[in-house]
Image (cartoon, rainbow over all chains, first blue to last red; front, side, top):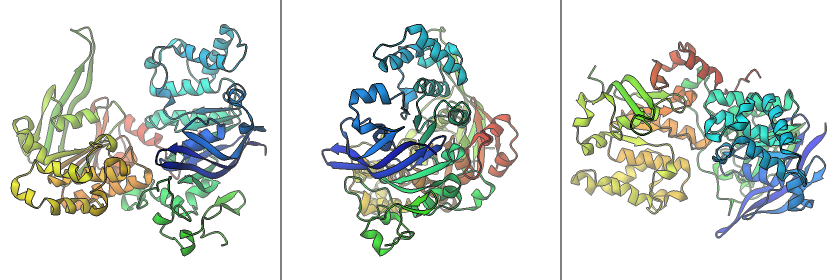
Length: 327
Length: 263
């Protein structure tokens, strides 16, 4: 299978007066063509920072310390900022940031936004009519009426805004789309339609080749993802197929997460869900050894001292935990 | 009917927008009637804009209803003095970070509440504060000296619950208390609410858009849609034999852990 994304040991974080926040600490990830990959974790675990580092959108206070990110054979960190803006973002990779649907300029029509976005990507942009026509076709493809182009953001519902944002960010057919919490502010019915749309982008319409969806909600990710990657305190702790993660989680943190999902099933009311005691660590000064050890029910002596490596347990199944690694 | 702890009768709230009749009216809550019994967790579910929070605000006396009445222990709540009413009815809100003065330490946040209470209780203040913090699963030594931003969302929500418990209310209104908290800590809050009702006999109105959480904690579910209650009953009945098309859609659209949507 062709690799669309290959991230190698990337490290980055935020410079603050209190010290350096190690938000992403040595994460490697490969995403293949035709795949939907989920990144799950709690707030502050570095999911969104990871997305920024993947696409090379590194602006102070965010800093990248080391590592590479290769998207469709292009090494992002070898390119200048201008090159990234014109050649990479929007064309090779698009990100839908969290809450992006709430950041639409309320005084501009949707089509003005389309023009803005597309003109940014060309030295000599195509004529206005052509851009609008392109957007019209794409909007219809994604089940949005072309009237939406002439509307203002306040005239659209949350779901329609999110659809419009997706349509605009995929106008230039990027190879990779990264959606950061795309469904977090939507009610369940709108959320379901949006998941359907994201699924179709990859599977039915082939507009994007690979989709990475970031969310804190495992039950939502499981609906469309083929593989899932679990992050904790800036580290990838487990990476496996969705079925394995849900049914046979290995890492104690993954087990804890799965056990805290409140999902309507007849047995739920009889169960007492446990959750995970404690809180995630401060990333300025993370605990030594395994970062999960203060909250881990199965911590071994070695977990306090040495950091567990991410090892391959079975084919394409990785976990970073001393319970499964050779010391 | 009036022997219920809280009785809500034909509650209606109409918001008017615009100027001198040129605007439009929004019926936020439309003839809502229900009872809250002692020690019961009642879940109020519905999508955003269905009138859940408006109902809560009216019960909290933060908003005057357009029509309809609310009775607390058989008395119209607007005839009960605020101070006395709020000693019995307390609330936990959605955003724990917005619920506290960021300059105050937890200790001061808790002590401020004591002003509501009679003097004899105030003398036991320290003991009482420790007691309620322990009750919500916090270590008093650890949190009393911290400011809100030093605590996690889950801890803050617990502090908020502890603050409620300090006045020993009979009713707690929890308006989306878990929607800004991470999954791993959400369950802890839900279990705490369950304990408060089962062990302490508190009555809780649990407001949420998440039908799974309502199913997990509540003894009874009310489904609100466009300001009306469209379905009510015990959780098993509402979830496994829903009658109203809205409830049916809500249940089928909720992402489940062990099932995949047909996409």
